[in-house]
View 1 (spheres, rainbow, N blue to C red):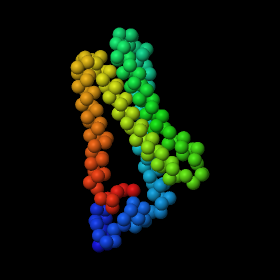
View 2 (cartoon, rainbow, N blue to C red):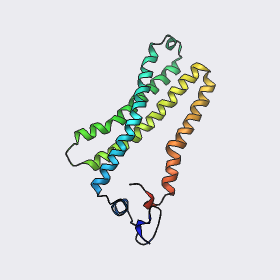
View 3 (cartoon, helix red, strand yellow):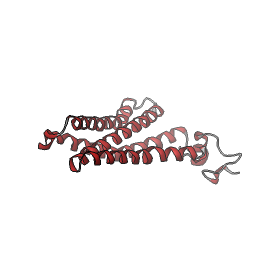
View 4 (cartoon, rainbow, N blue to C red):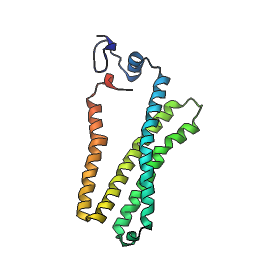
Length: 181
């Protein structure tokens, strides 16, 4: 079989590793692959960072609202957990910029891309926590605690399926040659 038949085609000449696949199918060197991975990651972070920063700004004004004084101790704790999760998400989602700046011109793009990937995953996880917390806070204020718990559980399940289980399922069921690199 010819390795140019495309992703998912297996045969004797199909490259055995991501690096081989990228070189054979995409015609990329390792540096070109790292540049593409970095560019893709930066684009993804731009989308997520804006939402996280908006969430933080909305959360920062909450304590200055008159109804905040009526929150129970538990809801205040939930508010702080939500706020710190959003700030933590922002820290991790902006960290790749710092990594890139500090390691600029040090020929460490592989390290930067690997660290940025880990930071992005941590930031996305914290974003999920912050969004669930914010939803529970709002639903509690609007309809009550029982509805808030239901909303939090449903939202947590939705995030787990959409952000973790489905991609892991597709990753597990895809062949190495199907990887995008």
